[in-house]
Image (cartoon, rainbow, N blue to C red; front, side, top):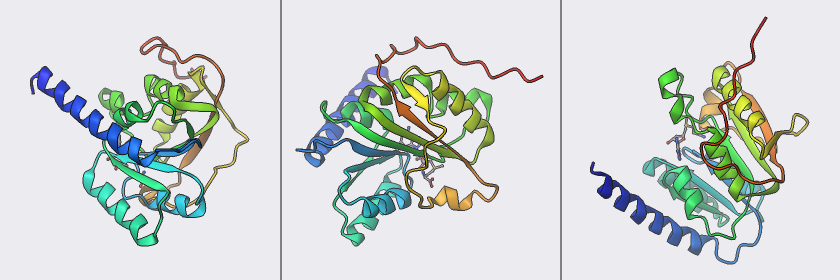
Length: 215
Ligand SMILES: C[S@@+](CC[C@H](N)C(=O)[O-])C[C@H]1O[C@@H](n2cnc3c(N)ncnc32)[C@H](O)[C@@H]1O
């Protein structure tokens, strides 16, 4: 696809998302709970039902999954979730400027096991910066995966990022099985990190962390 066409499609998606989110979050002054890559929405539907005063937003690349998720909350009569079809980075760009994230869930995000595909993993240093730019101080980033290597890779990046501090003592804030958690027969690992005060690094400015050298 020619670059100018790709850019104009992106601009038009961004404008649509801005409109959707401005409508959905109008008057919202509380920090929001965001789920990235929500799939069919099992987790956030249960979360929203258990936290009726929380304002929740979820995003997924696949339209059909978002449609199914929306039907779940409609059936349950939940009005505190906004389901967004789109890419997580674009959603973050489209959030109203005053909106702050209070809690972010990234559950069983695609592990992209081959090294040449690691660039597609969500938990990149620059993406952690984008999240940090929208997160209030103390906001929680909750990541869970059944992929051992991806867990180590993501943990290294969260630990290396100046805006996030791993909180080993933090409890997982809410338990409800997502589709991929149900399938994770060999178990999974979780981390919780907190937004600490400080400026957000410029894109590309943080060095990639080295894995620890084993004896
Ligand atoms: C492995 S599934 C996990 C779904 C769900 N979180 C669960 O635990 O069952 C990963 C989901 O993330 C979505 N996804 C991947 N990259 C994304 C991105 N950049 N923005 C939004 N959604 C994304 C995929 O479409 C897919 O639905």
